[in-house]
Image 1 (cartoon, helix red, strand yellow):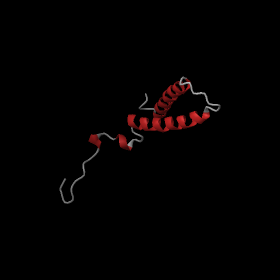
Image 2: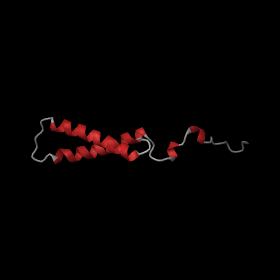
Image 3: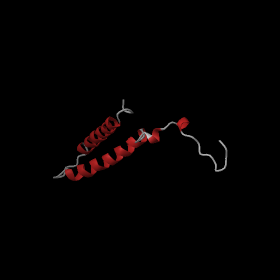
Image 4: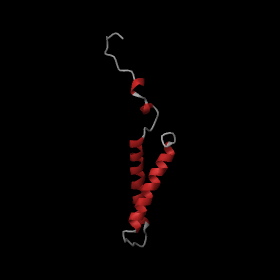
Length: 81
């Protein structure tokens, strides 16, 4: 399912990582007057990491998903096919 719907895979990765980070920060004992000073860079970092992680799970476009038998090897100049 997640290979067919890459947006769902990205959302799932982001939600899981965000939830884990929120639990970690909220249980760490940090008590600032404005917790958004911690949350904002945390969520930006999670977004960047989740996009990188998603790129490791599946190709971003169909051109990079070509199977090896679909790709023809390059021939040397002057060689006959």
